[in-house]
Length: 414
Image 1 (cartoon, one colour):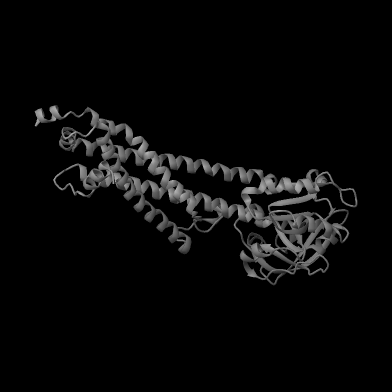
Image 2 (cartoon, one colour; image 1 turned 60 degrees about the horizontal axis):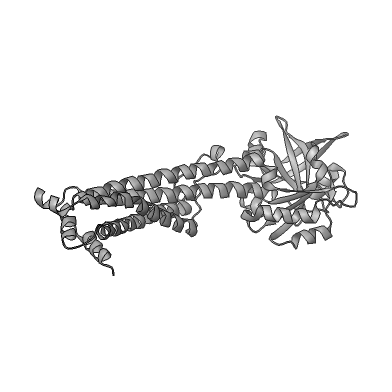
């Protein structure tokens, strides 16, 4: 153990009961670091959790990547394209692709005796992953998805059910407009609720065979294919990989394929999520500033109240550098204690919110019912290391105050 560290440990263990200022200063400095770190952990966890929840809901409705007809980009209605078994297998075999599913869309209108509502019917085949919809099912059951059998069952949102006065088990007429008006009677098998208005207000789920017939498409035609990948952070890489396979190629009807990431299909929503990072940076700067202010003030008070100690150390032959190191070691111990309490507070409150949802939100405004928190140990460790290093680096400046204290002046003053 070094000489400076040994002296710093003795100073840190001393209670300073005879000093009026240093003990409160030490406590304020320590709790300043603790509160700052706790707020940073909570802030980063909430923002990451909120972004994760919204992103997963959007992906649940449309996958990470969509392969569609290029002409659909310039048409109000989806244009048909052939996604055969060969293409499905090639897409499924790509690195990072977990699941591939076909879909068909058709605009229509749900009508009751008292009201009507324009919606988009989204037809799903038997390979459709129902995990997301099942997790948000609030009434009834899932319809039977198939590319070959018509079930005449639909899944509507809670917003639609309230607006139209419908419940699971009810029957409702739907009207579709193309060359002629088509009417179909559907059974509402279930009701879902995700609190994401942009989708809850528009999407009705049914089997793919029904939407194919309503569009007057062949059995091998669909609106496109959705791909689920294993890592959202590699979305651009996976999208480019899919583009290399399907872009600049056509189906058997000479319809060109086009590949789009979910971030390209809903740019405004994902741009808004990126803006949330700005809030995190502002909070981090403020909390780091709080830690720096309290630690700097505390260290200055501690140094000024230990003028005699500094004079004695210098009289015994200690250099200015050694004395500065003593107080920097002292500050590091103080910061370490603050970090421990900050982690206890931040992680503890986060775990309470994760498991019990103590803080609730209005889903009509925030899209979620409780404050979401995503704890990842790597960024918690990064926050601890950054707080320790930044604070110590800044404290080097006030530690130079010891070089201005001369033993002769102190003794003369005494």
